[in-house]
Amino acid sequence: MNPSTETTPALWRRLAAAAYDSLIVVALWFLGTALILPLTGGEAVDPRTPGGLLYQLYLLAIGFLFFGGFWTHGGQTLGMLAWRVKLVPDADGGRVTWAQALKRYLAAILSWVMFGAGFWWACFDREKRTWHDRLSGTRLMSAPYNVQLSNQ
Image (cartoon, rainbow, N blue to C red):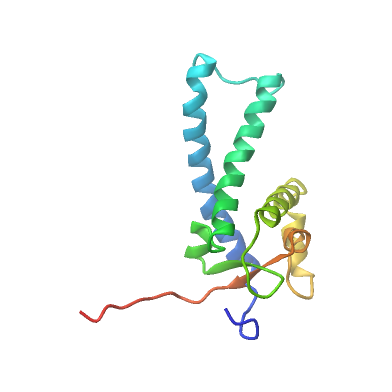
């Protein structure tokens, strides 16, 4: 991507990609929960117990592996690919690192916990960046269509 021709995607496109990805993450959480049900005897995990805290951390780890894996390998989750949004590091060239992905993931959780304030921040930021963009040293850019036609 050429920095001189890149544009920042509108907030609605970012949120649409997040909604798309949330469906995938919820499905992964269901699968992850099904894998540990034999360990709990099929019982729900009480979130107020030490086991409940481990379970919540387990779910957060599943989410991080989904987002971090995609962000560090190509810069696009499936939702971001569908809505033509790409994550790039602030520094020219290179790829998003796992450390940046972790900072972004945790800051995005904080943004959601604060009733989306970190996302709405983009409406007032002169570069249209969210809290998690700034805190992780990354930014979202509009991605071009990648249409490949065969000449057969």
